[in-house]
Image (tube, rainbow, N blue to C red; front, top):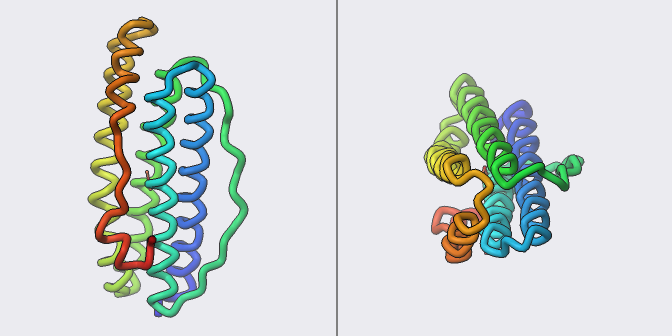
Length: 175
Ligand code: FEO
């Protein structure tokens, strides 16, 4: 069973993942309001992914004999000055999440909790993708500036994003 300290770190991270989803759902609402339905759709898929990350940790902690204890979820911002500003926050947020995941891996390894360290390797890889995607969209938006026609083209592209529950998640009871 993970130590009390590892359980506390995983419980905190569950709340952070749910909060990440809540933040992206708030960004979806912002983009809906701007009439950028593709951006809103992309954020809603991101919301599902984050919820899924939290549920994977929930499933793992239960399977490992620990106790899930949910915590308060901070209210997200509801407005951003520009679409680029929203993606600046996405990028910074994902970099922060990466640092948090690495800290928990370090803690698990220091305690010789190989099961938890192994479980978290999926998240280590996932964060490389999450940061890369956020950076790509951030950089594209920076190039486009506030050009309406270009934003609409990107909006159409983002409308095509799909969500599927990863095979890794089903292992931990995610439906
Ligand atoms: Fe679950 Fe985007 O970090």
